[in-house]
Image (spheres, rainbow, N blue to C red):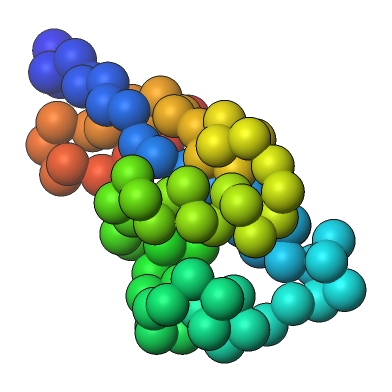
Length: 88
């Protein structure tokens, strides 16, 4: 019997959608407004990096949204054998 899948919480965000709702704001324009590099914005947007709380608040302020509308937790099941998202 295969080992049970492990559940984990991951931080997800709506930055890409919000940028496009703001007239297709570029990652560079957002980066300039919050004081980081475009690469940092890209990594946060792709959920490869979780921002500090201060940076998360700055991003939410740019979009004039509450923090919970920009960032949220998403539960993900991981396949224990490979530590990858479980396939349905």
